[in-house]
Figure (cartoon, rainbow, N blue to C red):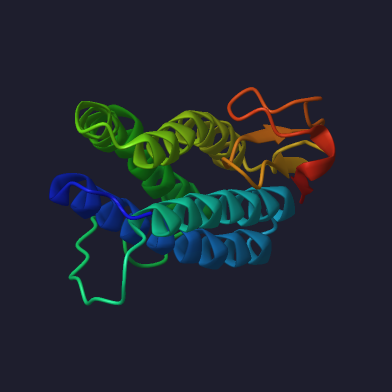
Length: 184
């Protein structure tokens, strides 16, 4: 089923574009971090890139409808820098989503009674809060010339919830079972 309201549809397309770009940017920045000797920060970028892909997929599904062209405008950081700077770009992007974008999109979906969009925006909002914090931890380590210390990063394939070292028995955002989490 596609969304009924044009505003929510526009917000879904914008979020899809932003999450798609974040996915690719984080994959690129992850490889750069590895080359700089930050293998765990590289894995963190890879894991969060997967979470962004989950968000993009959820938004894409909710757009629904037939085949149609649409211009998708989404703000993003472009270009490669050193890992510390790339992490700042990631932090800024995640905080924009947490503080500006997703609260507005979620409120519109709630107001317009778009249950699927509401769920998709909620999932992304909750994961992005965690991503901002994880990127800050990574940046603090990189500024000290160190890599992050963790065994694995786990990402929920339903909502993008991301956690270090051990997946929970059930995802605190969507309820998915532990064995569904993807490990990086």
